[in-house]
Length: 169
Image (cartoon, rainbow, N blue to C red; front, side, top):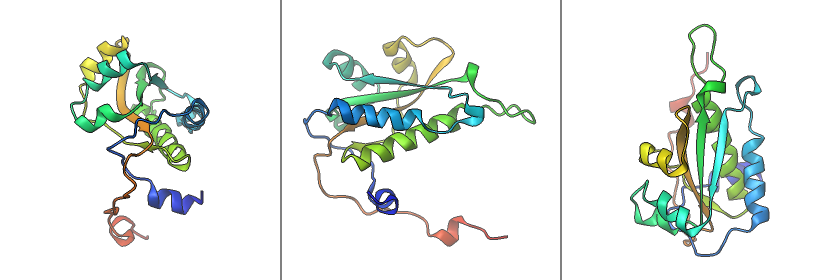
């Protein structure tokens, strides 16, 4: 798919069909996420792929929206703050930035393959950590449902105009 078309048509999917995601496509999505750049190439990101019905039911309990439970796969993206690069001048931890870049790669690759995703940040972090058995140094950053959209209607994107977001100096 042409990149401009890809970024213009990717959207947050909130209704998934029951069609399973092929293993080959799932691997391509994960490979794209793992190839994302990170500060100083420290790669402080981990991906938990949840496909089993029992574990899916547990993770669905971490975000209480009916549509979420229609996804056949959920990828939980976590950050490892202990291995992230911290900027020397002010100590800024780049874990969230590195995770965001990886998630963006993941969502764009998924869209290119005809799959839908939604970037969920408003979830129960404590329950997610417990569900996955995460250590104290590993932070759940986002839940990413993955599957085939059940609705073909692509919503119109509401974005600020370029001149509202760019300042030329």
